[in-house]
Image 1 (cartoon, rainbow, N blue to C red):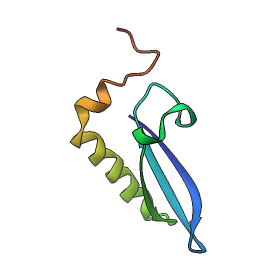
Image 2 (image 1 turned 30 degrees about the vertical axis):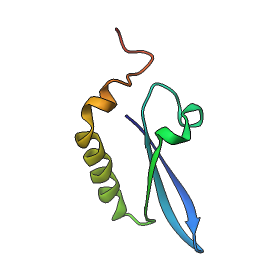
Image 3 (image 1 turned 180 degrees about the horizontal axis):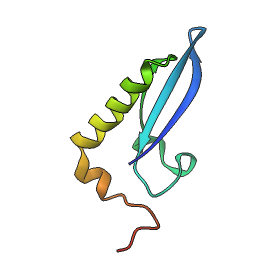
Length: 75
């Protein structure tokens, strides 16, 4: 599992947009249909919520994430 966090604006409000996607490719090279995204308030408190969400997504589909290993992983 890979993730990408960016600051963006929705309705004139700054937010964190968090994307998760399978490896081995980078965000730009991964097909959009393989990406999942969620927005969070742009605040320090959101950091814990973001980490919790990423961890929950990994735990719910651990087998899926593990079959998409890094290019550097040994077979």
